[in-house]
Amino acid sequence: MENAIKLLLSLPKTHLESSYAYSSLGRCYFELGKYKECEKYYNKSLQKNPSQLEGIEYFSSCLWHLKDQYQCCNLAHKVLEQSQFAPETWIVLGNCFSLQKEHEIAIRFFTRATQINPNFAYAYTLSGHEYVENENYNQAANCYKNALKYDDRHFNAWWGLGLIQSKEQNYSEAIKYFKKALSINTKSAILHFYLATAYLQNKDITKALQYLKLAEEEDNNNPMIKYQISNIYINKGRYDEALEI
Image: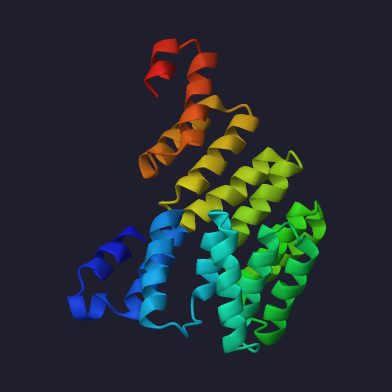
């Protein structure tokens, strides 16, 4: 993702300032979990092409992570006016309702996206996330597996399977799935963090600290990462190092 960002930013100005280039940058930052940068570039893309639908599902997910209900609802109104037959429209609507904790409605909208495009891996994954929120782990796992059937490099679904195993306290299995997700998106601080947490729950403090430090390298401003590293140092009696974090 970082190489893609460098290449996109190196484009001549006339190409860089296109809707497609801005949208591509937004997607790259989304996959890295850098949501403010993602938001910036998707908004630039929409300024260039207000009727854009391709990739807009990731922008709505970005707004979900930022907990920006106002902007997410506005986006939902805009895409609904453009097309009721695009799967991206129903993803945006689903994210909007998910943000309001209306998980059953969100699932119906994500399911509608898969009815329009049965190969839409991301829609299955988002349905899985909603089922996890409802603690319906069997149905969530089925959704993630459906996503992987259409895209076996869809790291979000591998992460989802890991999350289910972690919630069910099958930490060795969780580690396996988080590692698979991380092998696809190697620069994600979020994936490093979840893998570290699974190692911590599995009583492997050394591995947990290793992946937390890797997570910190990717996102040095994340307070949760720093908090977990400090906790490990405190438990080891390494108080000076804990204070430095």
